[in-house]
Length: 102
Image (cartoon, rainbow, N blue to C red; front, top):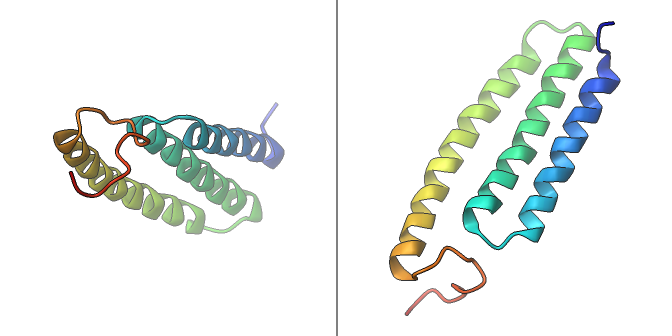
């Protein structure tokens, strides 16, 4: 049995929902970043799946590679922000660091 597009859309929607749930329910900055990565990867999966089933050449894969590059840059910038947050405050709990100055 080969998977059709509904399987990929289902997996993408589950990844999206888990990512949004992680971003909204956690207070740890690392978990929030992991949730954002799940959302971005769900979008990349849907791009590839729809491009494959529409018969296009490599447009979905190009979008997915572009998304992965942007996600890596976003993760690097966000990790730098989290490290600066941890340097100024003794925690990475985003609710406890609600000010920009000490």
